Figure 1 (cartoon, helix red, strand yellow):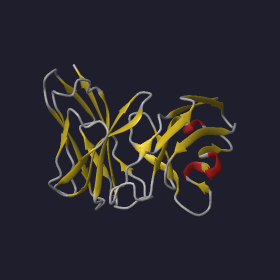
Figure 2: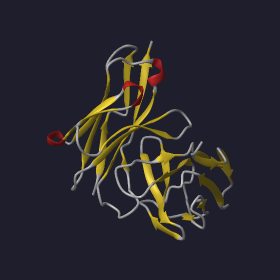
Figure 3: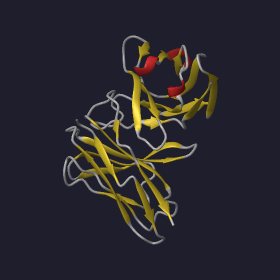
Length: 113
Length: 117
């Protein structure tokens, strides 16, 4: 079955560390997205990518970085510059064009310890 | 710019009662509208969407929503609540041609639905 796989499901980060969240899809979707979810704030867009080797900043890109070396993969790195990284991170994908909606992964919960 | 407001961060209904979750949007272009559901510690699942055509759209699990342009609303309803409907619900908007290629969805803050036995 096609879908999006996020790993790990839970991740703990120490102060000052960089951590990378994995997102893989086998839906043959061109576009991929990373959202951050905080209680009461909905979902906020971090980065998105329309094509391999290209990506664009979303609304809250500071302290995050991404890469898109393969169509299937869109990893997110939470750097030490992100001062409040504790959140639920969701990866999504879609075909290009509007009105089609996203397919979401099951999320990664990141906690700073 | 697009924006979404969901009225009520928490809605509680009795099992068998009507479910009404409110969503109002702001958009400078004809909107595409979506409702998603999220169960605890899971991703979001598409319930239904409006793009063009019939303004009353039906989705999964017995949910439906009506696009009312004059009221800039897209409220989600279900005639009879079931215990399994307890979850968080998100309304989202995108506009045609907002971004060439990828579509940028703007989400509301979410409404947590609780079902009382």
